[in-house]
Image (tube, rainbow, N blue to C red):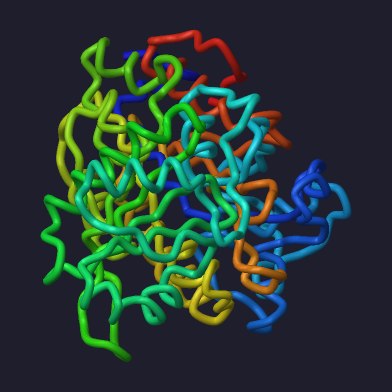
Length: 401
């Protein structure tokens, strides 16, 4: 294995707190996100976050690295941080999940994905007509909407007619909702694959299956969501790792984000608890070389988009306890990286993601903590992983290990 300062890195655990931004990026004005600060504003609203493990690691030291400085209420700067700390700025165009994770894996999306108008209609009529013809069901919706709101509004009509509820958001997405008792999951997933194929020329970032259950007035979305991403434009660090014999473990929705490419085994989950359990189970094993890539989705899906700072704070507290457990299971040959893919400030206008810096915490047991500064690109993660496992160099980025 590659040795760093006398230590062999056999396992790397990359944990992505989905949407946990830490302050507006320099180009936030291009996205209408001036002043956004996911962590900072949540901390203010709840009158102080309770994150003892992340505080000891140095989370509270990060705002001082950024323009304007600032603090995190309840998370004071650590006098001697336990781990290396810094922040990263996304360089790709966009502020969505796919773009952020792809950049972490070594890619740079300079053109970005297509965003649709609020509508109605949001999607071109010829596209809708072809989709209806190929799937055998009519489309209702065809506008930008909150998923829970449009299901509540159109769910009864959908159940009566058997039509698709198709909608978008401020991200580059086509979302297709259907009641599980009306449209079997395999049919919904097949329709999403058709939509994925049809939308490639439009450069749509994701097609998302949104199954739900319940009765009118009490519909709820299930954990059977699936994401169908735009085809990867070039190999990622995951591909290199697999080719080199490193076991790559995808946790959460990582398998969907990368279309299954470069993944040895996947533990798909649509909630933080299951994802955290999968990470702890992997850490308890002795298999190596191992690269685990996990996404914790609840911050974004349940609390960011729904503008719930108090729920967001509770989820952060649960994640803090998880990070403490995970860090305690690691040995001198292991490395833990905690970061995020974009922001989603629940105190901000609208319900969209926000263009922000993301935190960076890097823990290697027995290694001296360092100030990592502000990294110019999330692809520094890929370069670091490639360097540690000796499968690089990647085309972009600088290693922080």
